[in-house]
Amino acid sequence: MVARVHEFEKIIAVLSELIPEADIRGIELWDGDGARPIVMVTTRTPGRVIGRHGTTADAVRVALSERFGDARLQLNIAEARDDPDPDRRPPDGPADVREQHPDTHHS
Image (cartoon, rainbow, N blue to C red):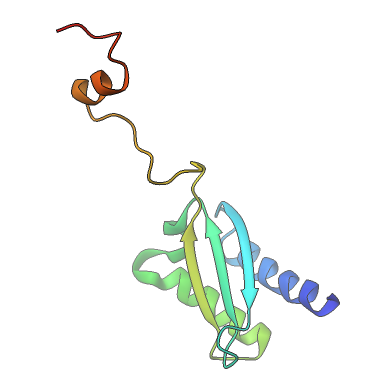
């Protein structure tokens, strides 16, 4: 368990150094298929983590690979969503509102 804590500390140090403005919401680490470590970063601002043309993500991947001593490290970036139901969307217009609230709209 202590080894995992040190691994997370390495990840946090790299992210704090390279993208301090990123709104990181979660970090996951697992061994993937056993051949390479996988780091999943969940953020409200994936564009900041990715950077223009992927340059920031590449720099993060290289720094993490160096800290972990494994050039095969895979970096995944996901957008954090505050909405508990990502399929839920607001009404598109009056027709949708009418369907949801028939008592409030009269034809």
